[in-house]
Image 1: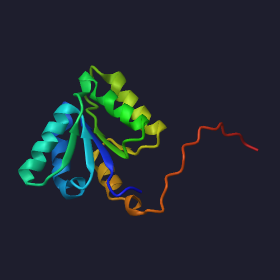
Image 2 (image 1 turned 60 degrees about the vertical axis):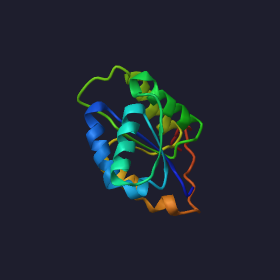
Image 3 (image 1 turned 45 degrees about the vertical axis):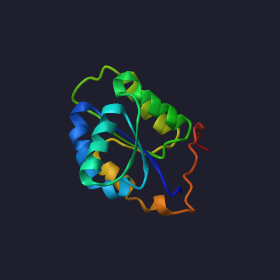
Image 4 (image 1 turned 90 degrees about the vertical axis):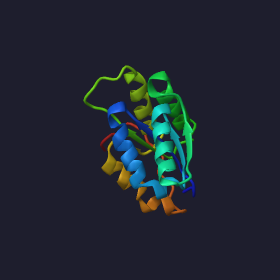
Length: 148
């Protein structure tokens, strides 16, 4: 695997505080990688790193409703994202639901691990497989299964 990962970080408004808290908890690890975020989330994450005095590479896209989710989905399609953390507000409707579903779908189609809650995110970033230079994820298979 690569030494420096590109990690996409996205959080809905009611999950942004949780994302900032998660980023602060994992700041040392995350600061070693390239972070790509939707607009507002990226600003909050950059502020969190600044408060901690930790330099970090945070690339900000548009806000989610203004196309940021779609921009990150396009990066996934181009194989520019290694891991995504998307803290979704499952309790409130989102005006850009189609973009949200597109990002989730593209991660699944292109074999990009995506965490939608903190424990999944913690488990994913702590995997030893990220450090295993001999590990290559198996390709996705969409072949119809038939019993013999």
